[in-house]
Image (tube, rainbow, N blue to C red):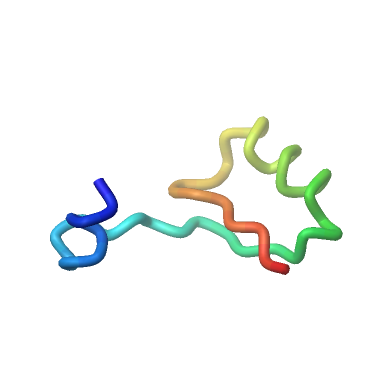
Length: 43
């Protein structure tokens, strides 16, 4: 999968990006089903 992402053949959809301190909020958002795509935690 990583080679296809690196080549640009597959592009993950980011639904939300949040700081790691908001991991609980990110989990709640994921559980709610109100986000389309991946939730990214930033450091």
